Image 1 (cartoon, rainbow, N blue to C red):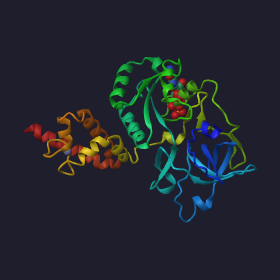
Image 2 (image 1 turned 30 degrees about the vertical axis):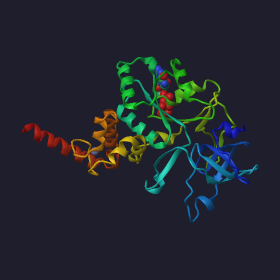
Image 3 (image 1 turned 90 degrees about the horizontal axis):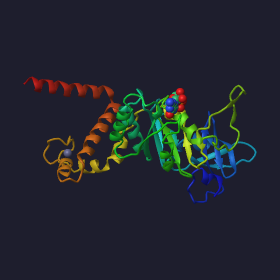
Image 4 (image 1 turned 135 degrees about the vertical axis):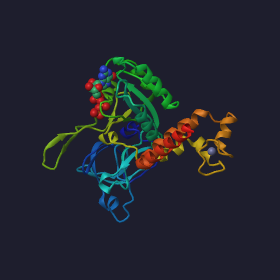
Length: 342
Ligand SMILES: Nc1nc2c(ncn2[C@@H]2O[C@H](COP(=O)(O)OP(=O)(O)OP(=O)(O)O)[C@@H](O)[C@H]2O)c(=O)[nH]1
Ligand SMILES: [Zn+2]
């Protein structure tokens, strides 16, 4: 096992003459990388990343890349290896028209929310959808358990309903209470990405999980444009237990963009059935020939699945076109009002 395997690398292919490495942090034009040689810096090879084809996705934190290794200066990144999971957001520098990856190759996503007034079940549903869409497995981590704020038990129950079978863990980073319940996800060479609003307790959680022994691979210093040295926050950390943690500012800005896609994979069972409904725009209500309702009646699909599917689909519709969503909602409300008057 070399250092790169410790950093979650699982490929067995020989990429010689190139060297494989993992991106641990991203700066303006430079990437911090870890390979079997240790920690080093890399820059994109322009001919490949900015050339005519321009198809190579820009690396992000967590990516495995191939480099032309340079022992005396910055190495050249020549390829972004295929990702097993990814979080993307609209790229601000391309008029939001194309996606920009903000984290890649994580196995679990800790969806972090605090057990106080900031707890928000809608946001949780959003993060769950994003995670299902990313290709990784969600774990809901409810922080600040030690505060025992009014309603905290209801928040836990609500999270469990929303999580739909995904693990839910209530913990305290302050007292360490129940932190051991997260150990099953913190495995050697497995990567955990943190998702959650500001103040939810992500940094505190990482510090509590890391204890004193966050593993460093080298000094993290960078010269900025004015030649100043700034100590940068490494976005991919290795804990003493051997697990890797991704915590980046980009993850904090993840919105609801392109959330629709996630529905297919998380609700493949419902989607497959819906494809067999007589009407392509079947709402799975009282329409004749509805395959979804039929499956529920036969006991082959839990009715809860349909409820959850609808909920997420509504969320997704909202993100696609908030104005249309509100128009439709008000149409529904008007119709209901007319009916109840009758
Ligand atoms: N009592 C208590 N306070 C906590 C716990 N976890 C975090 N906090 C506090 O909550 C505040 C926010 O925690 P952070 O870890 O900075 O939250 P964050 O999600 O990293 O926030 P950003 O860095 O803004 O994204 C801090 O004042 C922490 O001390 C906890 O388990 N119990
Ligand atoms: Zn139907």
